[in-house]
Length: 259
Image 1 (cartoon, rainbow, N blue to C red):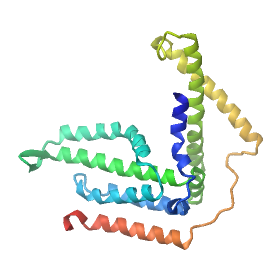
Image 2: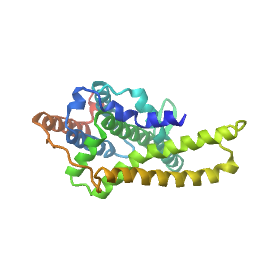
Image 3: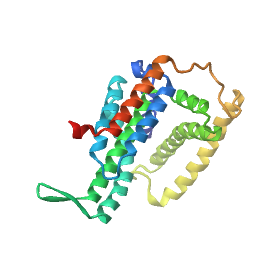
Image 4: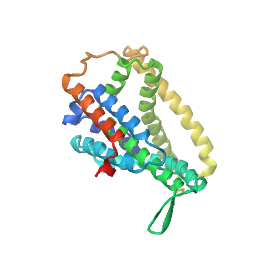
């Protein structure tokens, strides 16, 4: 089962190897557009739900053209759903002032705030997933370097992303060994959980040291060797301009009200 988790962890990275029009765009263009998209989505009033609805079009187009399966992305979104739902529920309970009546039922500002949080979280998370599914991870980190992000943050992102797989792999080996010694036990018994987590931590550190030693033997000195870099092309700049202009228009003009 844990091996399936490793596969699911990196399935988005596998989607980034496709060859579509979105994949061929420069990583910087997609980074800038995604950032502008998130800024536009979260800039609406806390009670404005309808203003964010037109932004569904961007993720639908990117996922459609980039051949990113929405079902896979939605499964990833479910991980973030409880956190945003909990934040929105507090508004639902505390902000009970009636905003308007709909079909005889009172709609409170707290309910509008909850819907806005859920909608904006969905749009932002799906935009980031679409970026990852259409851009190789190495391309994203390389662009972050060229955008002058501090090296320590980039190294942390790279190492955490890679070492999660190492951690899950070690947990899978330990879980298999535990099941072979406890045939009648389903899962890991609570009385053994403390020692299991402790051993997992020690084994992960040891595995990490071996991985780092292997990287150092191959010339790693804190930064990965820089490949030949090609900047954005005119088509990429046009993509940035058109999409940012579209986001600005959707932000300024109430499209649904106009319709």
